[in-house]
Image 1 (tube, rainbow, N blue to C red):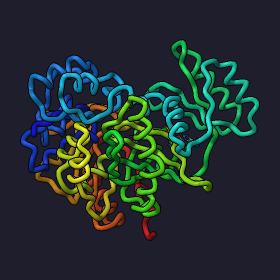
Image 2: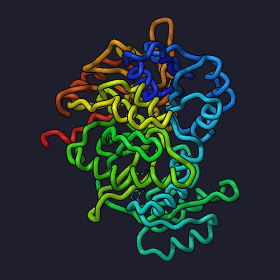
Image 3: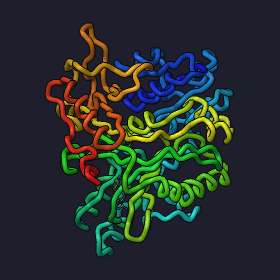
Image 4: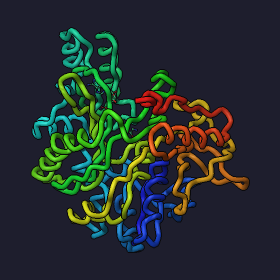
Length: 425
Ligand code: AMP
Ligand code: GLY
C-alpha cells in the first residue's frame, strides 16, 4: 500500500511510524509533517491540507491506497468528503459525522437520542438568557462553546460569578448564531476510550489517561496534553467492553441511522461518577499524546485495519489487529513559555526521531521541530513526545523518563508525574 498521512504533530509521526512498520506498506508520505517525520515518511511539500479539492486532486494523481487524516481541522473542513467523492479510501469521518467533535450541541443531541449517559445541559445563543439561567442555579455550571475554540472553549468555573463572566467572554465577540452549552458539573476520575468505528461496527483500541495541565499535580494552565499512559489499571478490558456496548455501539448506530455514518477513530472522554460513567466529549481523531502511547501497543497490520474502516469492510477492520500486553507512558517535552508564548529556534539534542525499524523500548515522536544543519531545532510549543514501553507502567515510565532525560532543549518544560499515581497499584 501507499499511504498519505495528513498532519504535523507527534500524533502523526506515531501514525506514520506505525503504518511504515506494516509488511503490506510500501511507502508512507506525510503532509506537511515536521522535522522528525522524514525518518518514516517523505514529506509532501506545498499541499494545503485544509483545502478539500487540493487534497483530493493530489491524492487522485498519486493514487494512494489510503489517506489517513490525523487532526480535527481537515475533518471539519470536509477533506474526507472530497476524498470519498474522488474515490480515494479515507480514514477519518466526513464533515457531517465529524460534528460529534466540532459541535458540542450536536454531540449532546446525539448522546441524548442514542440514550447514552452524559451530563445534563442546556443550549443558549443569547448572552442575557444564558446569564439569567446561570443566576438561577445553585452551583456553577460548566460553560462550553459550540464551536472549535482552539482548546479554549470549555470553562469549569468555581463560582456563579465566574460562570457568568465566562458566558459573556465567550458569547460577546462570537459570530452571530453562535451557541453555548451550560452543563451540570460532574465529579469523578477521567479516562479516554478509543475505538475504530466503521458504520455500525466498533473495534476498541483501549483506554488511556492524559494530562492537560502544564504543571505537576495538575496545576498551571491547560495545554494540548503533557503526557499520557495506557493501559489504565482501574479501567480494564471489561470496562472498555462495557463502554463499547453502552457508548460506541449506540452512537455508531445512531450516526448511520441519521445519514451521517462514522468511519474513523472515535475518542470518548468519560467521567466516572458515583452514578456511573458519563460521556463528557467526543473527538473525531486520535488524541495527542494518547496516540503516541496507544499505537505502539497494536500488533498486526494497522494499515489493513484502517483500510477496512475506510471501505466499510468490517471483517478486515476486526481481523487485522491484536492488542499486545504491556504498558506505554508518553512524556511531552515542551518549549519554554508554552502554552502562552512558546520560545522557538532552540537547538534540540538527544531526540533522534523513531524510524520504521525502531521498536523501542524508547520511542521519540517529533512535533514542533525542524531540521537544521546540525540536527533539529524547536519550532513551537510541544516539541517531542518521548514514549517508554515496558511490561508494566512502572517499567514504561522509567524508560520514558530515561529517554527524556537524554534530550536537551534550553528552557524546556515537562511534567515529572506522568503515570506516577498508578505506581504500586
Ligand atoms: P471537554 O472538551 O468537553 O472534554 O472538556 C474539557 C475538560 O473540562 C474535561 O476533560 C473535564 O476535565 C472538564 N469538563 C468538561 N465537562 C465537564 C463537566 N460536565 N463536569 C466537570 N468537568 C467537566
Ligand atoms: N489529549 C487531548 C486531545 O487530544 O484532545
